[in-house]
Image (tube, rainbow, N blue to C red; front, side, top):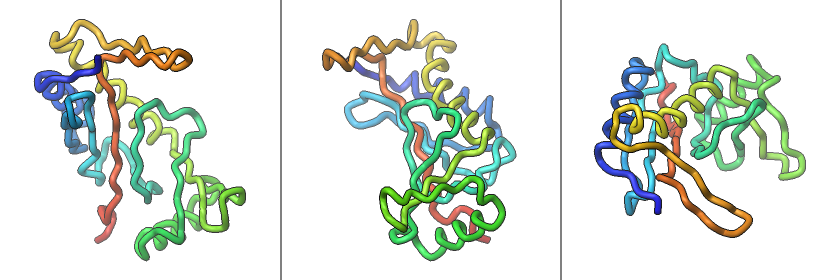
Length: 167
């Protein structure tokens, strides 16, 4: 059964601080202690360039090459639409219009650096407690075909854009 304790979240927090000293994270247990929620708090970091990430999102699996997040211009704030228009000018190759979903939906692709950053954060969430000696190993023995879920604990990384990029 999925469970994470306070010592594991502390180990994750310390390892994130060591690997990404210029980025601030919030590391908390989820309700019922089934997993850990890691939120990127400080986004003006030298560890990674967050430019072009203009929408909130959560990930719980690795971002594959060509990974993207969904952006909807109709539901976005005026400021986020301004950032989107700026991105269209400086990096139009990162934007794909989703005509299958409607005129207001776009996929915005992560840069390689951003993809590597988020994947490393997910990796740290699973390896840090083992490295600190808090748990023996992180395992996922789930079998979705038989509706059997057996994971040490769940890891989610959250990116909340907000208005962090405003002057």
